[in-house]
Image (cartoon, helix red, strand yellow):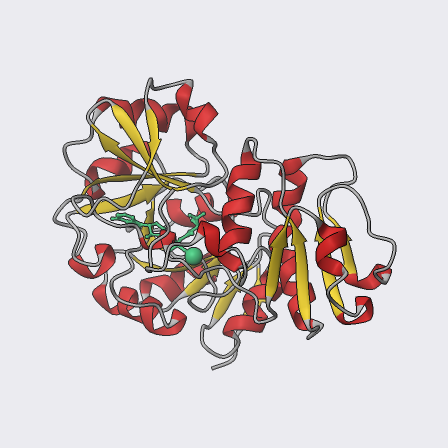
Length: 333
Ligand code: TXA
Ligand code: MG
């Protein structure tokens, strides 16, 4: 199969109607999309990504009116959140309707839903009579793609089409939340922070490893990882001193490191803007990984706002931050 990249929404819709997969742009990362109502298409998503079948998918809808088609018993608080954050990087876990097959939710009674905020994908969704199941368009465990080239490099020959919507605006994944009475449970931290959720609801807590609750595989211990070993640190100068500076890549927040060659060094936001860091994070990891260096040393970002989610991704990408990773598969937060 040859993988083409282009901006043809009509062609993308035709392929999706034939149960083919199309990589789609969203404001967070590129998704690997298929007809959410077709087990054939959904099975292809799992196979193409090499994704374990216990890992459920997010269903993308065009507008709130489609919510009743995919979910039932929707709490009013979910509608409030939808009004505030959709289209946008918030994924809500809700009881699934009968239209959503078990393969989409990995057998769970709940479905994850969001309205993505990207004009091209919204237009595509409006052209279709079904929602799109779409995980991030990377092979399982690898760094999520934030531009068409990343998808091309990772899934070349495996899908027919990449719908080009340019570079993703936010650069890290959506925040995944569930509901527990009046409070919100964060299953995966993401673009929307706890503080923003607290503007709408009184109680927001992070999901913990309590076996009475369904696990969210976004919490897999090792995830979002480059092939090059990544070391996360609060003291870049110290970490760098353990290596030959010519053989490593370095990612810092706002300051550069003198001994590292400029082409191996990425200061993600000299202005100290964490949103800019999020936007550049994955593309920098893709670039550094391609350089086939001995190691990547990454600076831990300030733990505020979206910095919390950036650190979450860096922790999961890293080989050294065991203190953040219990020795089971799920990371408790
Ligand atoms: O930003 C995003 O969310 C991107 C774009 C393409 O929308 N999608 C994405 O999908 O990151 P994926 O499959 O890489 O991550 C989906 C996350 C996983 O952590 C998964 O475990 C969780 O959502 N999830 C999906 N359905 C769930 C469910 N029923 N219960 C609990 N967690 C669920
Ligand atoms: Mg993913």
